Image (cartoon, rainbow, N blue to C red; front, side, top):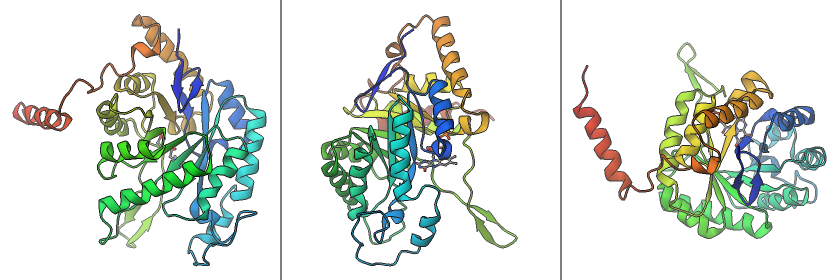
Length: 324
Ligand SMILES: Cc1cc2nc3c(=O)[nH]c(=O)nc-3n(C[C@H](O)[C@H](O)[C@H](O)COP(=O)(O)O)c2cc1C
């Protein structure tokens, strides 16, 4: 049974990647994940705010602008210097690729951090665009330009592959990805889970929380994966809502080159990855597939000439046939 895949120029024995999370704070857990079959791991993100004001060794002070997150960022587990050290340590102990994750949205010296991660052995960089388009005076194209500027800045720093972790609430996704590819990005991760704090009416107060995902979150991702498959040279990883082997099969059928898993592992432990892989193999065997490549994109919308018209027609049909 051949589960090999290629993602960001990395030849992986299977498509399962451990997504960005605290799962690899600890080297022993990272080694358990490797033993359970993880093909690669993504480290948790290092935020632009952690790199401000010369926090990282050898970095010049930024323009001195006070950032309200800067002090808290210093308290974050694995601050900037420790992050690079930990990355180097993981590289020594693991034989699978380690992908560093950066989270930022403005130009600045912090992008040099991509080079430091690459020098420490990162096999690729995942850039998480945590854009929250709340500015009434910034247009979608200005926001896209800001993102493309960042991509170019990081591509200039290092030659390791770059992937973009995007939010589903971006601008025109296919259009943006076309330009992102032109700017040097090699892959995209669909999608980030957007930060959604809960509103407690008794306060009223907002309580920030980051819970595990539910399988329902997969549908949005599948839909976009199927839409984008085959329309660009980029590699695509699906992140969000993978809880069973059937979810993983769905992701590949929609067109994913790689699958990132976090919540299932947080809930059930590193060894649950082993079961996931074993179940994928069993399913493929039972359904007479020998190579994961035979599954990739079979349920994509590649042959749909007008995805927008197709989506509207499908919705219209559904409503027409609705019976309460
Ligand atoms: C506790 C926790 C911490 C996370 N930390 C990060 C992070 O540092 N950077 C990032 O890009 N995504 C982070 N994520 C998002 C995950 O990488 C992933 O995109 C999301 O959880 C959806 O995948 P899942 O359904 O397999 O959990 C985090 C998720 C969780 C639950």
